[in-house]
Image 1 (cartoon, one colour):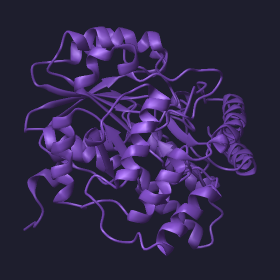
Image 2: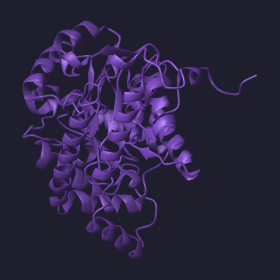
Image 3: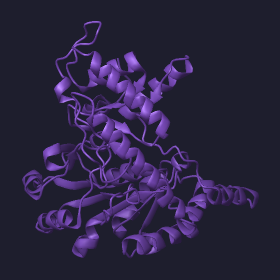
Length: 400
């Protein structure tokens, strides 16, 4: 007899958290492990943000806040959307939660009915499909291979939309591929969405500031303002501001949707930490020069990883335009065998055998809905990345 609900049979634990936990356990046991599985900047939170949190604690800002966050934080988020994205929201159109994942969770819980459909381009961030399934809805996965630059085409989007479609999820720059949608890409997708007024759009912009090579970031509402009233723009301070552990995400969107999300949150987490909120105010309103400095380091690391992986026989790696992930293909290695005779049947085997043989922890592509690939996070030091790439090269050379 199981005490769990039926819906739990359709939901899996987060693969990224599982892989990272496994790597930590091995490392704690004394194994020489290089963990490139978790999407977390290795830079510390900037001092002015930490100081703002410390000041808030000394000033007694340690009590409950409004469900949607403090007025100061919502004003800072409203100003950020106007400054960075040319998007106008009122204070009441801002939603604050414990990171990006609860933002998506709240939005889906507030809107999805059993049988509704959510269009998710693959490769996708691992939690999109499972959050969808939690509410009895159906994830509609659209394959976007490397030949499509890992991006959904207007034709694919139009073919996927049905009368049951409730949401289309758009993540740019992408986790796990680093692919990013240009203005022209978004204009073409917007033309499809204008013909389908029943479809809501979730624009996951969490990596908007992590872009390279003069790429210019656009939100889909920038290129088509008529989508404003059905687009939820999601962001947060985790990635660009090096605040993953502070757990603070935010979104701007239509009044009715934000009210529904707020109602959901009032019955779950209530609100995120008051200290994290004070820190986020400083992050959004304060000095941002460290972002460009960090991006220079990320770009150098990206170039290093892509070059070294493309020098490995059997691996092909596209150049990411943003975020801090590479998504190389290991297709040419499927069917090969390790020195102890184990066959690599898929990318999950490749990742598992690599960890066993060389102590390099990366994520298998099947977790993101598109195989045979694996995800490498280059949000690690240059020295670690060089060593990890050398180990991957050594492992692949031993395959027969």
